[in-house]
Every structure is written in structure tokens, then in C-alpha cells.
Amino acid sequence: MNKYLIATAGLLTFTAAAAQQRPNVIIVIADDLGFGDVSAYGSQTIHTPNIDRLANGGVCFNNGYATSATSTPSRYGMLTGHYPWRNVKARILQGDAPLLIGVDEYTLPKMMSSAGYATGAIGKWHLGMGTGVVDWNTTITPGAREVGFDYSCIIAATNDRVPTVYVENGRVVGLDPSDPIEVNYKQKFEGEPNAIDNPELLKMQWSHGHNQAVVNGIPRIGYMKGGESARWVDEDMADYFSDKVKTFVTEHKNEPFFLYYGLHEPHVPRAPHSRFVGATDMGPRGDAIVEADWCVGELLKHLEKEGILENTLIFFTSDNGPVLDDGYKDQAVERLGNHKPTGGLRGGKYSLFDAGTHVPLFVYWKGKVQPVRSDAIFCQMDIMASLAAMLGVDIPEGLDTQNYLDVMLGKSQQGRDELVLEADMRLMLRSGKWAFIPPYKGKERNLTGNELGNGAEYMLFDMEADPNQTTNVATSHPDVVKQLKERFVQLTGRTLE
Ligand code: NG6
Ligand code: CA
Image (cartoon, rainbow, N blue to C red; front, side):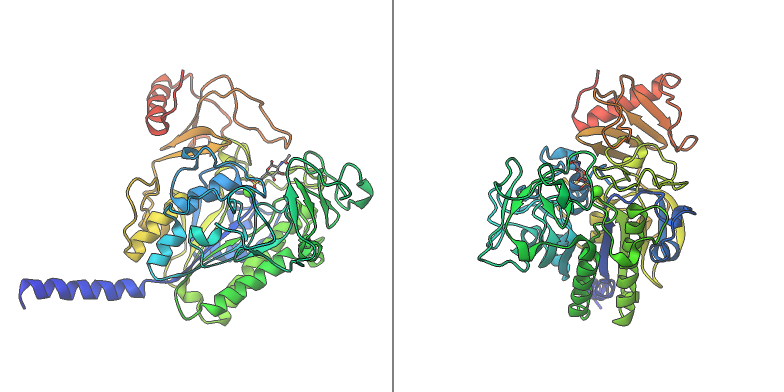
């Protein structure tokens, strides 16, 4: 055999091997689920057996990170492989916000498509849709399809924001054309109920914000009119999306598929189905987590039933850290008991402290990935480059995503050394064992009670010795602070005093 033939033969073998390594890929991403909210990380106060099955049967990251402490930027980071703070619009979006991701932008689902995958997004979206002036009564475009999802069945933003309808492939589900939907985030619609004027309609009370449209007895952010027949029932949302997930899996079981499954729990308003009410002693927040666990269980059962569990790589994570009172009086604070949603980590949702972005993160692939607890830092943003490496796909240069395939599959514990993490456009740098937070003006805590990480001084924490960030060691480590300041400026392009 001459050299040319040997090379060709080698290539063919490689391609065949690569083709065998095309498991289905599912990302399950919960909403505001904290590091301490799943029993896999040691919580004795809540039991999440289905989520634990993934954690204990796969790579369970003790240092898994989202890129941001809130939803929109976090999801943007994972789906685009770009740090969200590079895009000034990557902030918490309202329900009528335009599509945040450029239609020409490279994305994770587009990468998966190029590797021959069918792609779908089901559940929470929160990345905007349309061009800014959305007509909810026609096909809304651009949207999930332009981001790279062949199929989508999503909620536009959050479960506390209007419009409270499901959007399937760009169309509002169950809409009666004679009752068109209008949405307004500035002005109320005359004659439509709202939380301030119609408290008698409320089955759940708001604590801050959330006092505009009333849908299903729950006050929301934003005003909405019409679309009565299309409005979701919060208590049925888990079942609704679970059914959509099963249908998607069944329809695509004979080809590789990529599914993004955005659970809405335990984001506010917490309104689990009646069969989960009372599942915990913690009230709606705890019960919603049990509902999320049930959703994971249904997914696993369905994959088993279709005989494809062994051929499916599953990520489980959360978009940002936990919060108790995020705007509704649902007893999340009062009934917390001994439960620690952050698992003891400092801060929470909205925070530059660790619990803002330090989230549950597991990679499960039955029979292929060995169960291991990994201390490596692994970030959701790196899923893109790591999967690309697994599938043999070239991705564009200039992205922030990096290939940590061996870490992702539990074969190496050499994770990321540096990460720039974001909370409401404020940034911090995680570098090796150090967490470095520059000074930021602003309140110490927001209305949720979560500490934001603002302060007049530089903060430096040794995450090995002090993972709960109790002691700022900046003054005793001036050399480290100096070095991290320089690195922060270099990485972020921002200035520091
Ligand atoms: C905030 C909401 C909060 C939640 C959050 C988005 C108020 C007072 N607070 O503005 O309830 O909806 O946005 O959460 O309106 S996230 O997890 O989607 O980022
Ligand atoms: Ca969230």
C-alpha cells in the first residue's frame, strides 16, 4: 500500500469511529436550582432521586459553573460559546424582547446540526423572539429555528412574564384567531384585570414586582390581553413539556438528536401540580424541586422505554444560583427549615459571590462515562467546544468556549483555570483557587435578600481553604490582587482603579 492509500484508509476508519460516537445529547437545564438543592451534593432536606441517578451514575462536578448569575446571559453563554458580557444586550429579557442571538451567529444547536443531529428546544427559552415588534398572532420569526433548533416548543421568557402562552415552532399554541393576543410591558390594557386593581383575583400574592397582568390567579410582569384559550395553566406546565419531550424523543429515536430541555422549576411563580403539593415541608419551592426531579425521572424512563438510554449523553444543570423570595409570598423563606439552597456557598442568584454561578452540573452517559466526582472547574460555555471535539466538528475561531472533552467525560480533572463570571454586567474573575471581585457601587443586597457582591474594596477569596467565601484575604495578598487586576483588565477590556 502506498502512503496515499494508508492515509485514506486511516481517514475512513476515523470517520466510521466518529460516526459511532454520535450519541443523542440532551441538556436538561433547571431554572434557579441551587447547588444545595439536590441531594447529590449532600442535601439531607430534599430528596431528588432521579436527578441523583444522573449525578451518581456519571461525572458529578463539584465545581460546575454557569457563565452568569441570571438566566438570559447564562443561556446565551452556553448556546453561543461566547461570554455573555461581551453582548450588552445579554441581560434578563422581557417577554416581548427581540431575539438576542444573531441569526448568523454560530451556536451549539447549529454545531450539532452540522454533525447530523436533529435539534429541538423544549421549555424555558428566555432568549427573545421576533424583531422587537412581535405580532403574537402570526408566525413569530426569527426565533429558535434561526438559532439552530429544527423544532421548538417554548415559553418566550420566564413563567412570571407575559405572554403566558406556549410557542411551538413560532406559533402560539391553541390561539383562537378571534381573540388575538396583545402584550405591553409599559401600559396596562383598559378593562383587563391587573394585580393592583383586582386583588380579589389573586391566588398567589406578590412581594415585589409581579403586580401587573393576572393570569391563572397569579400576578405577572407585563400586561397582556386576549389569547384566553392559549393561556397556560402553571400547574400543568411540567406535564405539558414532559409530554413534548417524550414525543420529540420518540420521533427522533432512530437518528442522533440534540435536545435542549429547559425546566421552569423552581423559578417563580412556584405552582407545582397538585400531586406534588406537600411533597416537602418547604412549601411551593421545595415541591417545585420535587416536580423537576419527576420530570427528569420521566425523561429517563422514556429513554429506557425507547431503548436509547445507553446511546444518550445527558447533561443536567441549572441556569443560575438559587433565590428564595424572588417576588412572590410563597413561604420559601418561612418554611426553609434547615435546607441550604446554596449548599453553604455565599450569595445566590444575581450575585458575584460563588453561589450566583456555581451550579449543579452532571454528565451522564450510561455505560460510557464512569461515575466520578470531579473537582475540576467545568463551565456550561465549554459544552460547545467539548462536544465539537467529540464529534469531530471544526468550530469558528474567536469563541470563548474551550475544549475540555476529557474533563467533561470524567477522564481528566484538569479543568478550566480561568473564568470570567457575570452578574448584571458586573464581572468577577475565577483564577485557579482564587475568586477575585473588584469593587462595585450599588446595594449590598437586592429585594430578594441575596448578597450581590458589591463593595467598596477589592475582594479575594481562597476557594480551596474557604469555599464559602467567609474571609476576604485581599489585604494580606497584595501581590495576588495586583496580578489578578492585570489579568482581569486583559481578559475583560474593562478598567480598574
Ligand atoms: C427579575 C424578577 C424575578 C425574575 C428575574 C429573572 C422582579 C422584581 N424580579 O426582574 O422575579 O423573574 O427577573 O429570573 O420583577 S431569571 O432566572 O430568568 O434570570
Ligand atoms: Ca434562572
